[in-house]
Length: 179
Image 1 (cartoon, rainbow, N blue to C red):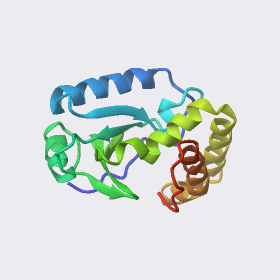
Image 2 (image 1 turned 90 degrees about the horizontal axis):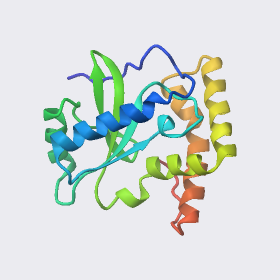
Image 3 (image 1 turned 60 degrees about the vertical axis):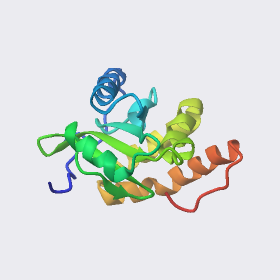
Image 4 (image 1 turned 120 degrees about the vertical axis):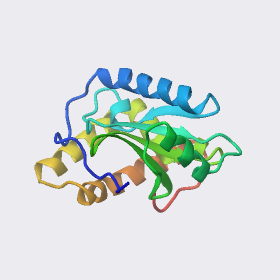
């Protein structure tokens, strides 16, 4: 299957209370199809109340101890998700509606789970409204300037890294240089 790289036509949209329900549906389906050994957490902008977001639900997926990411890929494909691909410091899988992404699952091993940057970032933004609002302004500004795809991701990278490192410092973890 080709790498899915098609997002919905809406770049970013206003916060939608339905995102929590969609996450709950996705989580229930994953637990049903994969078993209860998996950890599933709502992350990304759709998990942060009051934050604009791409209309795609992000999930952090904690692979059960003893299961490799390649083994997890087999299980995820059987559950209707795509083959995991490397994205930065981890792998991701996608749930598609035709060619369009509807959800992204960020895979982390049991050893990576506690410090997974997507979890730290979302948690920080939920607890720090000023940073949430600054992130919303950054995202909105990038989209207004016509920046999307890799440029959009690069445009957010410094902000995301700074927040992740503040969240890591709060937990007495060493900073990281890249995500």
